Image (cartoon, rainbow, N blue to C red; front, side, top):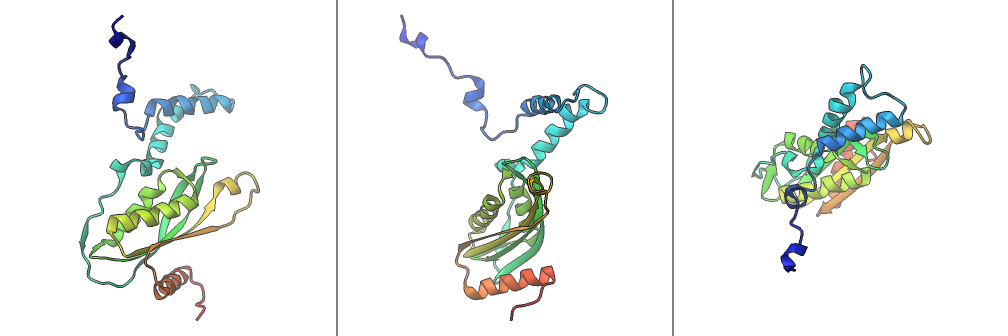
Length: 210
C-alpha cells in the first residue's frame, strides 16, 4: 500500500482557524444549553433572541481583549517630559474566569516615558481592551502593566486596580467588598511611587499621609 494513503490531510479548521478567534456558532449553542439547564424554553417568546443573538454579541464584545486585532492603535509621539505621567480613575469592567461574572472598579496608571509618549485617551482605551477578557484581577493588573511597558517602551509602569467582584456579591459570601491589586514594571523609584500614591489619594478624596 502507498504510504501516502495513511496520512490524513489537515482539515480546514486545524490548518487555518486562529485559536483565539470568536466562534459565534458555539456561543449560540452554549447559550441555548444554559437556558435549557436553567429550566427555560430557549424558543419561547423573549428568549429566542437571547441565545441566538444577544448572548453571542455580548460575549464577543467582552472577550475582545483576547484578540490582537481589537487592540487600540497606540500611536506615539516624541516625549515632551521625562517625568512621571499619571492617569487616575479609569473605569474598568472585566469578567472573572472562575465564575464568568463581572468585576468592576477603577484602574490607576502611571508611566515614566522613554523616547516616546502616548495620548492620554489611549491609556483609557488600552485598559478597556485588556479588561475585555475572561481573567482574574491579579492577572489583569499584570497584563496592563506589562503590556503598556512593551507598547510604550517606557522606563517604568505602575498600575493599581480596585474592584468589586459580583461573584462575591451575588453568591458565596454575598458581601460587597473591594479588592486592590498593584503591579510595577521597570524602574519606578520611591519618589515616583509617592507621587502615584498621592495622585490616587486625591482622586479618592482621601487624606494625605504627609
